Image 1 (cartoon, rainbow, N blue to C red):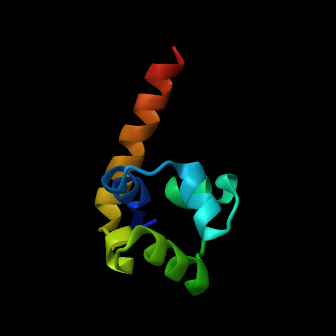
Image 2 (spheres, rainbow, N blue to C red):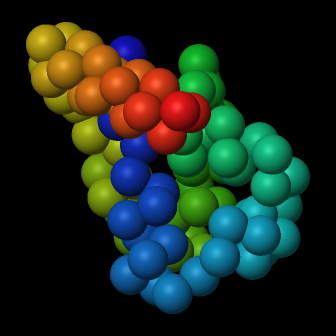
Length: 87
């Protein structure tokens, strides 16, 4: 998908854990992980607004568009890393 999610970047900048963010936003850690890992198909504006409020950022700090070729290259790199890590 050409929309990349950079929640992990903001979490690192704010020195906040996924669990803490999920609690403060009011979503489950599992749903936050789906969003953070780029597996979500959609995000509600209310959730996006809550994320921005807690992380003190703009929506563009969390979401960015990247060309299909870049997204495919990153996905292939992740798949290679997973298979290498798997043994």
